[in-house]
Image (cartoon, rainbow, N blue to C red):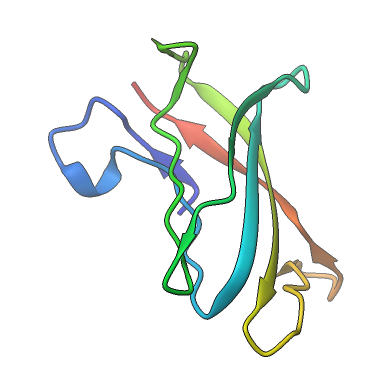
Length: 101
Protein backbone atom coordinates (compact mmCIF):
# COMPACT_ATOMS: atom_id res chain seq x y z
CA UNK A 1 0.00 0.00 0.00
CA UNK A 2 1.11 3.57 -0.55
CA UNK A 3 -1.55 5.36 1.54
CA UNK A 4 -3.37 4.84 4.82
CA UNK A 5 -5.90 6.70 6.95
CA UNK A 6 -5.64 6.22 10.74
CA UNK A 7 -9.06 7.77 11.40
CA UNK A 8 -10.91 5.85 8.69
CA UNK A 9 -13.93 3.77 9.62
CA UNK A 10 -12.47 0.82 7.69
CA UNK A 11 -10.01 -0.93 10.01
CA UNK A 12 -8.07 -2.38 7.07
CA UNK A 13 -6.69 1.05 6.08
CA UNK A 14 -5.87 2.48 9.53
CA UNK A 15 -2.22 1.35 9.70
CA UNK A 16 0.77 1.11 7.39
CA UNK A 17 2.77 -2.11 7.48
CA UNK A 18 4.95 -4.08 5.13
CA UNK A 19 3.54 -7.33 3.83
CA UNK A 20 6.31 -9.89 4.14
CA UNK A 21 6.41 -13.67 4.56
CA UNK A 22 9.03 -16.36 5.26
CA UNK A 23 11.26 -13.94 7.15
CA UNK A 24 14.12 -14.73 9.47
CA UNK A 25 14.17 -11.05 10.42
CA UNK A 26 12.91 -7.69 9.17
CA UNK A 27 13.50 -4.04 10.03
CA UNK A 28 11.17 -1.18 9.13
CA UNK A 29 11.64 2.57 9.61
CA UNK A 30 9.36 5.57 8.91
CA UNK A 31 10.75 9.12 8.60
CA UNK A 32 9.24 12.56 8.12
CA UNK A 33 10.27 14.94 5.32
CA UNK A 34 13.18 16.27 7.43
CA UNK A 35 14.62 12.82 8.11
CA UNK A 36 13.38 12.50 11.68
CA UNK A 37 12.72 8.91 12.73
CA UNK A 38 9.03 8.54 13.62
CA UNK A 39 8.70 4.78 13.86
CA UNK A 40 10.83 1.65 13.95
CA UNK A 41 9.89 -2.02 14.21
CA UNK A 42 11.68 -5.31 13.86
CA UNK A 43 8.66 -7.41 14.87
CA UNK A 44 8.57 -10.75 13.06
CA UNK A 45 6.31 -13.56 14.24
CA UNK A 46 6.10 -16.99 12.63
CA UNK A 47 8.01 -15.68 9.60
CA UNK A 48 5.65 -12.74 9.00
CA UNK A 49 6.39 -9.07 9.58
CA UNK A 50 3.87 -7.84 12.15
CA UNK A 51 5.07 -4.31 12.99
CA UNK A 52 2.71 -1.54 11.90
CA UNK A 53 2.73 2.27 12.02
CA UNK A 54 -0.51 3.89 13.14
CA UNK A 55 0.48 7.38 11.97
CA UNK A 56 1.48 8.69 15.38
CA UNK A 57 4.68 9.99 16.90
CA UNK A 58 4.99 10.58 20.64
CA UNK A 59 1.31 9.73 21.02
CA UNK A 60 0.21 12.45 18.59
CA UNK A 61 -1.34 11.82 15.18
CA UNK A 62 0.88 13.19 12.42
CA UNK A 63 -0.36 15.63 9.79
CA UNK A 64 -1.55 14.75 6.29
CA UNK A 65 1.45 14.24 4.12
CA UNK A 66 4.01 12.00 2.53
CA UNK A 67 6.38 10.02 4.74
CA UNK A 68 9.46 8.03 3.78
CA UNK A 69 9.91 4.37 4.73
CA UNK A 70 12.87 2.00 4.64
CA UNK A 71 12.78 -1.79 4.85
CA UNK A 72 15.48 -4.44 5.22
CA UNK A 73 14.80 -8.15 5.57
CA UNK A 74 16.34 -11.60 5.44
CA UNK A 75 14.32 -14.63 4.38
CA UNK A 76 14.35 -18.05 6.02
CA UNK A 77 16.30 -19.44 3.04
CA UNK A 78 19.18 -17.08 3.85
CA UNK A 79 18.63 -14.61 1.01
CA UNK A 80 18.16 -10.92 1.69
CA UNK A 81 15.31 -8.85 0.29
CA UNK A 82 16.75 -6.87 -2.65
CA UNK A 83 14.11 -4.16 -2.38
CA UNK A 84 11.31 -3.02 -4.67
CA UNK A 85 12.09 -3.11 -8.35
CA UNK A 86 11.89 0.32 -9.96
CA UNK A 87 10.90 1.03 -13.57
CA UNK A 88 14.55 1.37 -14.57
CA UNK A 89 15.29 -2.15 -13.29
CA UNK A 90 17.20 -1.01 -10.20
CA UNK A 91 16.07 -1.96 -6.70
CA UNK A 92 15.39 0.32 -3.75
CA UNK A 93 14.74 -0.37 -0.09
CA UNK A 94 13.05 3.03 0.29
CA UNK A 95 9.58 4.24 -0.59
CA UNK A 96 6.91 6.66 0.50
CA UNK A 97 3.46 6.46 1.99
CA UNK A 98 0.75 9.10 2.21
CA UNK A 99 -1.02 9.63 5.52
CA UNK A 100 -4.60 10.81 5.01
CA UNK A 101 -6.49 12.24 7.99
